[in-house]
Length: 125
Image (tube, rainbow, N blue to C red):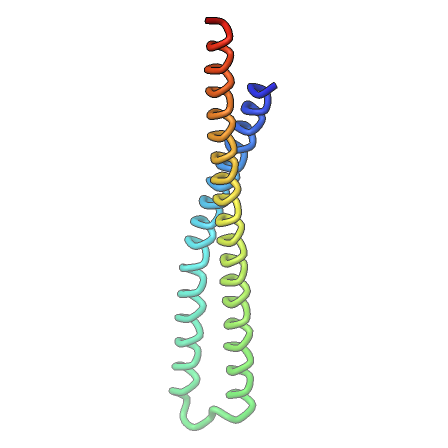
């Protein structure tokens, strides 16, 4: 019975560890995707702004408002990407904590089994 419980806990620990590893790799992939996208959006916005500012005094209030709205939308998209990365990071932390708890449970079961073996060996002698 204790061995079956230990095997169950070991499987749980292994599953939690795999979940943590998967979440870590997803977070790394998301970070790789975010960096170029944010940089490109920022560079494109700066180039657009620069081009509009170079026009001879034709940058009207309407054009400025349009540019501001465009930049605001890009900022909101970037903030959503960062929020998604933070959420994924929290799930990684949660999976790591679960793996640590499962590992502690497995270690406790190992100790119990060792104690039971020792007690049963004493009865045999």
